[in-house]
Amino acid sequence: MAATSIGTNHREEVLSIERCLELCAATSKQLDEVMGDSSILPTGLVARLAREDVKVVVTGDASDELFAGYDPFRALRFAAHYQQLVPSVCIVPHEWRLSGYRCLT
Image (cartoon, rainbow, N blue to C red; front, top):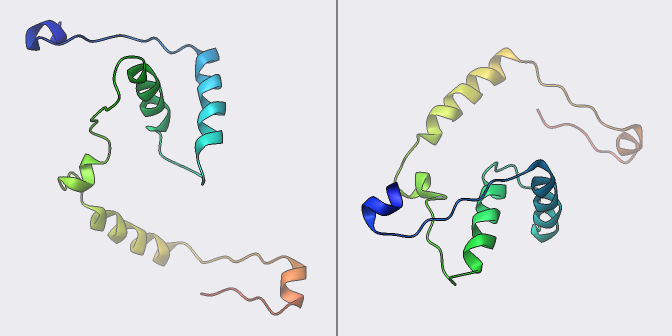
């Protein structure tokens, strides 16, 4: 419906559990660091689908930062309050303590 109203071609893809697990395995091999972004799987799927027809895709991913869509400093205020309420705990393995390592508080 949306595609027809703006004169574009859209494609729908249903993601099964099996395909999701395959995508998780393939995507994790491509990342060079741990990623906690939940949009990595749908973005990866869209990229794979788009690659069948086009070379460049423009997405809205990261537009929050670009267009100030959220206030990151609000989260920092909550974090500061949380740090006051929750005691700091540092667990250091015995071997590290022997080498002089200590927690920074």
